[in-house]
View 1 (cartoon, one colour):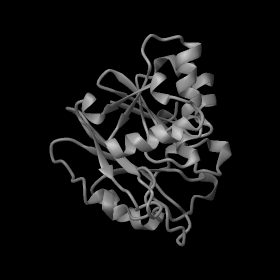
View 2: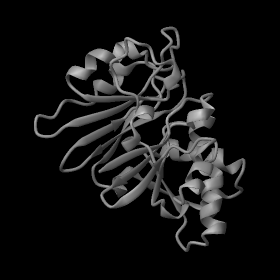
View 3: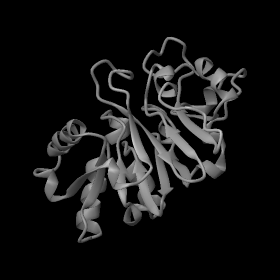
View 4: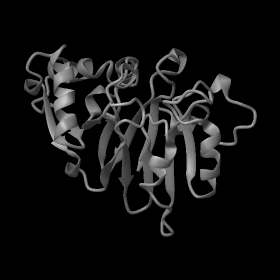
Length: 231
């Protein structure tokens, strides 16, 4: 499994791009989140024609802002006989995404196919609805193959909810890519100090932060500072 990032910043960290992952999992390329900056990054890296599946954590613009453009690029620019494919954790979230897309793409299902996560063995979701913003549907995702488990938190204010749904595996490592905040009063993102104790049990990395504001006492590595984790 290869897990790399197209962007590592939050909604306003334009210099680092919106957080989005580029994943090679079981021979398929998965785009995880598709915020405002993501389409340009995909074009820059010549990746638009290699997307097999799209996953979305929630519907804030820094996670879906260029989703419709990526879908329309697939249809009109690539002229692929296969529509873009979005994997969804449940019918309710599928309906939300279809409704969102309908504001920019009339009749979205002409351009995109929705499939359940079960399309890919070893892929599952953690329903974090209301844990980022009250009432907002949101999801973290778990990727498990024969060698390791990788967890992508999505945006969440209470990290314990994520860790309650995963457990250290004595037979293979567990990597956790967790969004975070360096502001203790943030509330909608997990404060980094709450995550420090998790390093004893998990291979932990932080994203969705501006590395220029990384506190001196933070021992958790930032995705933005690790070239091998960047596209």
